Length: 229
Image 1 (tube, rainbow, N blue to C red):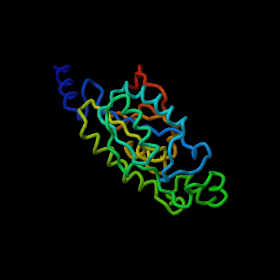
Image 2: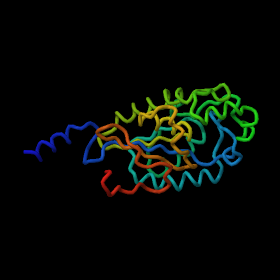
Image 3: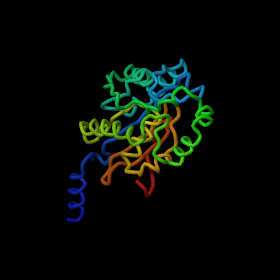
Image 4: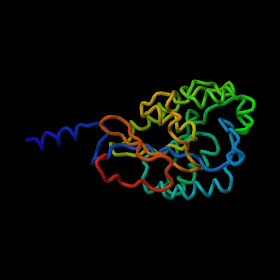
């Protein structure tokens, strides 16, 4: 009787099938020239370098093994070119969303990190402390989450119960989206480390909401064998 009751409960859990549930893979774009120069890109439409294309091509072959059901992407060129490498491997055509763009950072865009600290030192330090700051007169991080996270959640709801959504976006936009989906307070979003070019994070949907399974990964996720499954 006990075993039967437990099985019935598991079958009724939303977003669960075969014990896995839905997944969201958030993939940062490949390298750009401004990345190399440590310039704040924001919503400036900067293309990939040749190295960035090669990074995307390598990562696409790995991510194809996760068998994504749906691909969505920022409409900026560095993201669309990254997504195109996955299309070449899987045939999946991405849907492009302006809402998945990187944070608009106004006067910060195009400046190096050194220039930002020199010209906007107090603003920069306040941002690093987790305070709400309109960097360069641009968007708040919460506003980026307000536009990006709902797109991800709407697309997830269309998936089969064990489906995988792959999101091609930008480091800052991915970080705040993860923070929002995990239910973290905005002041703590900075505790999520950054993503290297063409690395990704994986969220899994469980009985108590979203869980961070992989972060800044460059290899395929490995199963968790232990008591914290």
